[in-house]
Amino acid sequence: MNDDDKSTKPDFVPYDAEAAIALVKKVFPRSTAESLQRSTMVPMRQVTRWLNGDSRIPPGLLAKLEKQLALKSVFDDRVRTVYADMREEFGFVRQVARSCMLELAHHDHFEDFEDL
Image (cartoon, rainbow, N blue to C red; front, side, top):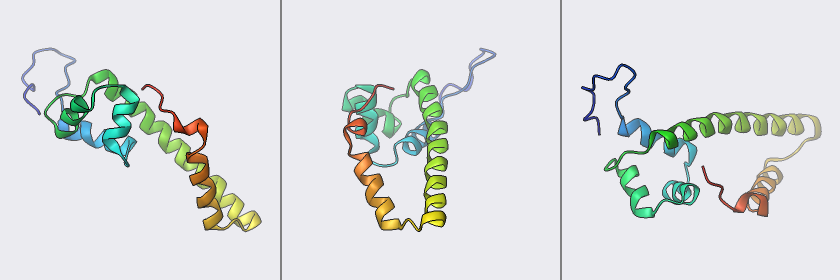
């Protein structure tokens, strides 16, 4: 949906549906629609419209998703560094690390969704 690139506003940025949808999928690569719906408390019908490009994702939500993507990258780097250090220093094996991360992901601290 790029129907607005003719605006006369000086600070106007046209909406790019493909980029907006790609951002959501980077933040929530698994269960994208469900995760977005649960994080925004918006009806699934609206989330589906956003992800189909039939409706615009609000700019405020896109800004929040951009921030979360940056934080996700930092978190990913830190987890990978801790794992690599423990593997090298103590011989921590992949299966145990994976099992630990899955267990943590299903811990009460991570089960509830927070509003974006």
